[in-house]
Length: 166
Image 1 (spheres, helix red, strand yellow):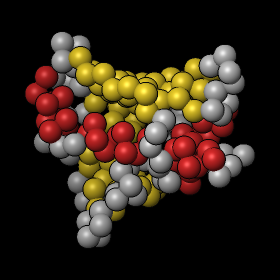
Image 2: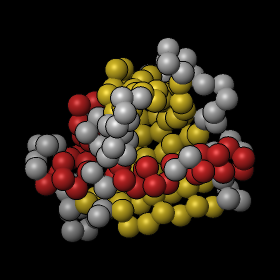
Image 3: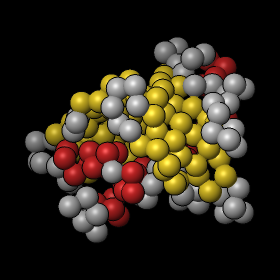
Image 4: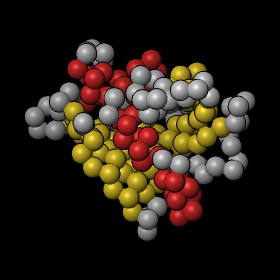
């Protein structure tokens, strides 16, 4: 599996997931910039994502839903705050109700994605989520965010191996 580490820092209210791939930064970036590729890995293996809106520009929106094994749908959204292709992406990340309206009862986290070239030509991907409060972090981790994210990221290896990113 590509995930090399998960670090949780309750004092800073962060969770950082690090993964490494034997592919160049530009190929890994396409997994974020192409919504059809993104939906092949974003979300745990049993909850595949479908992206409806995907506007990776500062101020842009990304909306999606994950479909569970029983057909249940869980909506999410991103509000893009910064994009520096092919190395950096930052966004607010939240849940939405069935109509796509941000869910007021769920914490909104801030995600920072960094893609760094490795000396061997591979890529290190670091995703850091910062939570609004310790309670918000506990709630998200209690819902399985760590396991879901590690499972989702674990699907990237197969996409890169099959040449899905060119």
